Amino acid sequence: QVQLVESGGGLVQPGGSLRLACEASGLNFRSYIMNWYRQAPGKEREFVARVTSVGNRRDYATSVKGRFTVSRDDTINSVYLQMNSLKPDDTAIYYCNARGDVSYWGQGTQVTVSS
Image (cartoon, rainbow, N blue to C red; front, side):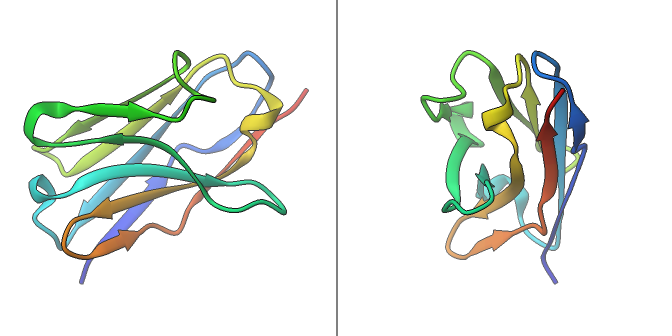
């Protein structure tokens, strides 16, 4: 059974930082491109960042480029999202996604940026 479990969300003031983590189990982690998505209230889910395994390529949405950093540790089946200079517009539920022949999703973790 495949599981993706996110952690690290919370309430942070504008300009602050958070580090999200996603631990995967039940899949060949190295074979999957790992993505982060987010969904704000009343909006569609949107792509945030991705990291490949082979070549360690990283891609970001324009809205987060330069502020967020995605990384992965294949030895412990985990992917991370370091979020700096957070803005109120970053408020959303953040989801971890593993994409290979099949796509898997985590349950999400809430990030709220507010003073």
